[in-house]
Length: 60
Image (cartoon, rainbow, N blue to C red; front, side, top):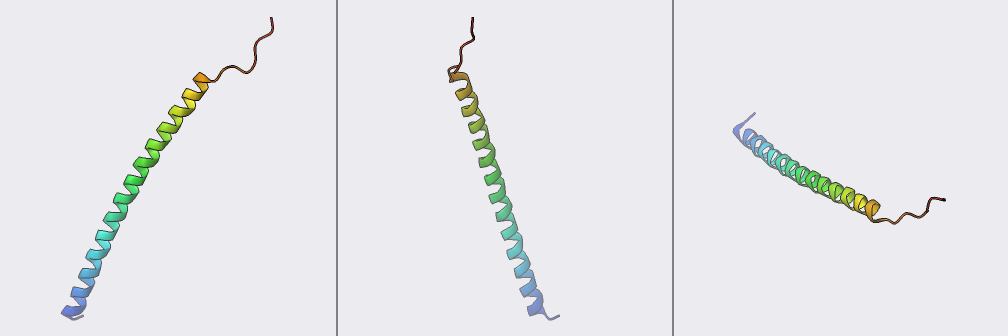
């Protein structure tokens, strides 16, 4: 293998490492957003349950 081939392989490897690092950052940010949305949704559901009037009344 000559030096030009080694240099090409080295550059490609660095590009792939940078791409992987960017993808990991994107995945992390996406997971944080999903977690935040999930928490918000749970909060909204709990609030709706607390505020919902009862649709039936017990017989006496």
